[in-house]
Image 1 (cartoon, rainbow, N blue to C red):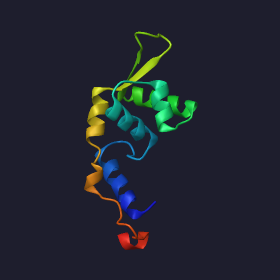
Image 2: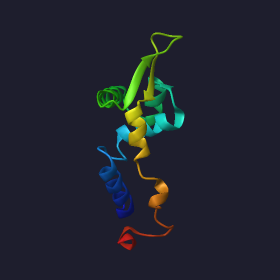
Image 3: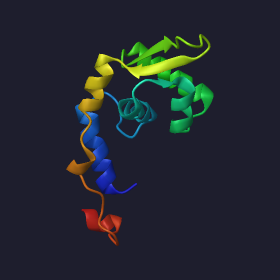
Image 4: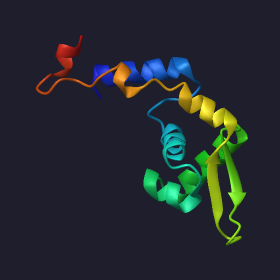
Length: 112
C-alpha cells in the first residue's frame, strides 16, 4: 500500500474509532449508499465469508452503529440498516476528494 493511502487511512482513524479501510467501514459505507438491505445482500457485496460477516455485524450492532430487523414479508430474512450513530460515524469519514490518489506513473518514492 502506498504512503498516500496510508495517510488517508490515518486521517480516518483520527476521525473515528475504526479503520476506514476496514471491513466494518465497508459495511457502513454500503449501508449508507444503499439504505436498508438484506444481510445476505450486504455480505455478498462486501465479499466477506459468512462467519466473518456475522461476527463483524454483531460487533457493529453492539457498538450501536447498525440495526438488525426482521423483514415484514419473510421472517427468515433479516435486514440491516445504519443506526443514528452509524450515520454519524460515516459522516465523519473523510471524503476521498480530500486526499487524491497518486498521478499516473508516480511511484511510492515520489509521494514523500
